Length: 233
Figure 1 (cartoon, rainbow, N blue to C red):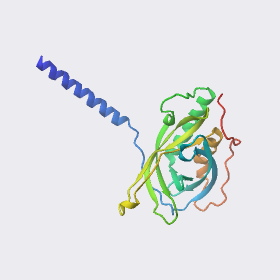
Figure 2 (tube, rainbow, N blue to C red):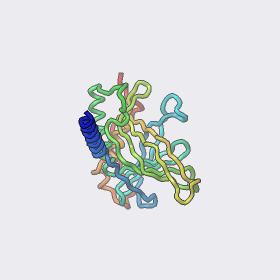
Figure 3 (cartoon, rainbow, N blue to C red):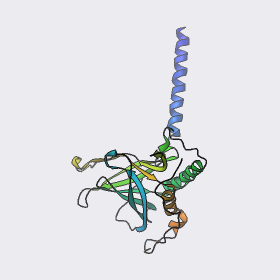
Figure 4 (cartoon, rainbow, N blue to C red):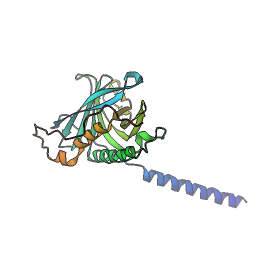
């Protein structure tokens, strides 16, 4: 009996180890990268998105985001203000492709009325990608920066669905001065389908390939008419 007990324990330990290995191998490896803000860049334009209201009060607030393209690093920055800080959220080629594919899937489920208000983890349903983020309160204060992840999915607000991008919490540790270490909270962006389609047009590789570091006149992508929200009744 004792021998059989040890056999069972050994088998169980082997199975658990195998599961752990499979889980580890199935984890998405986030691509880490950095961007020099002084690198040559081109202003692509502006888009509108929604954020949660200040202190998480009811409703959403509309905000304007500036898009910049850094051709040397091949990244697009979404530059926005949130809680008195200026953020740069960088999307590399892998992340941009994931956004376009996720929006395509979202539109299919939207048209088929398959979006579920009660679905767990809907905010990261379509993909999770790596990003590089910088944030700064004033131009004379220290520039915080860190790698984190973006969760791409959808969420309902006030009975209406929004395509969403959730920028996860980012930790910046200043090795020169612990007093300058800081944390960026998780920040959710809410897109109507028209707003998301506009960003997808800017993310399109064909559009970006036409730009050069010296480009000044950037053509604006042709997108759907603007709408403040999508009805899903």
